[in-house]
Amino acid sequence: MGNNLLSERLVYNGESRTPTHLHLCAYDAAACEETAAERFEDLLPHLGGGRTLWLQVHGLRDTDTVRDVCAHFGIDFLTMQDILNVSHPSKIEEREAYNVVISKLSAWPDEPDDDIRQTHFCLVQGNGFVLTFLEEESDFFRDVTQAIRANTLHIRERHADYLLSVLLNGLVGNFLSVVSRIDDALDELETSLFDDDRERDAGVGIRLLRKRYLLMKQTVYPLKDQYARLFHAPSSALFRRGTRAFFSDVNDHLAYVAQTIDSCRETLSALMDLYVSNNSLRMNDIMTRLTVVSTIFIPLTFLAGVWGMNFRWMPELDWRYGYPAAWGLMLATGVAVYVYLKRKKW
Image 1 (cartoon, helix red, strand yellow):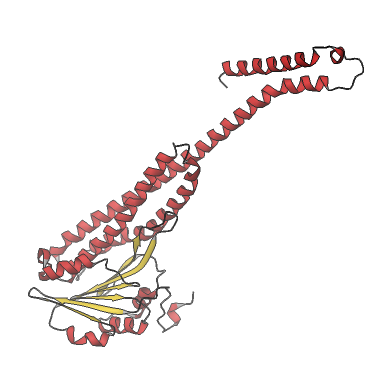
Image 2: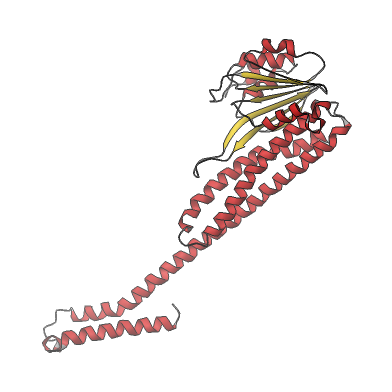
């Protein structure tokens, strides 16, 4: 990775092939206007009027469009680079004229053995506007768009900071849905550890769920402390007093997600210990069975070795009933050893 402080180029480093396109929702208490475009200049006539602006950018391949959007709203170059860097860790950052949230939208895999699918997501909130950047086409915030159209809970009468709280609440809800799936999968895995037919696959399941857990931990944990520090700061000019209760509610949800992740960590640790313990018990059981078999056959091997010696004078060799007597002795010895071990509860 090159030094981004020494380059003026904007580079999208993701793999999404979604063409860059824009969706603008401009609203006030009286009405809501929605406009879609592929170029930012086509939206310029719709940006005025003192309305709250919510601009969604889907697809980040066209870096020039991203630059035009950010330049119009006063977003600096370093933030532009963060928007286009899909491997950027989650963060919440306060700038002089806007706030930035960088995270991932997560989707539970359709196939049991696949990883969680994550989509780079960036949110920028300033005075009178909210910008959302997604590297792929998504209808994740469709319910927010419908709420604005219907003016649910008088959302159009509120300002951009309230819209930010609504979008963040949706983001945290996404975290919670995925982490809850991990928690449920861990419960199922715990049950399978006590099922002899499924226990052999438990090790693979533990490794897969641990990988998913670590992915969500890396996504959620950086936001937890940064969120509390930013939105509880009394000096922030971008948040009105009346909306702080909504941000506090989002903080409660984020704290619950973090607690669930901690619970998953403890469950994973306990399941790993249980899995190792079960393997040890199974190995001990196998060794016990092998020991029993060896103990039974040791005296039989001794008898066979004695009669297998090539001495010339062995009375048993000339005895008419020597062969069946040898079989009888060996069977009786084997049964006697087995009964003895059985009484010893081996």
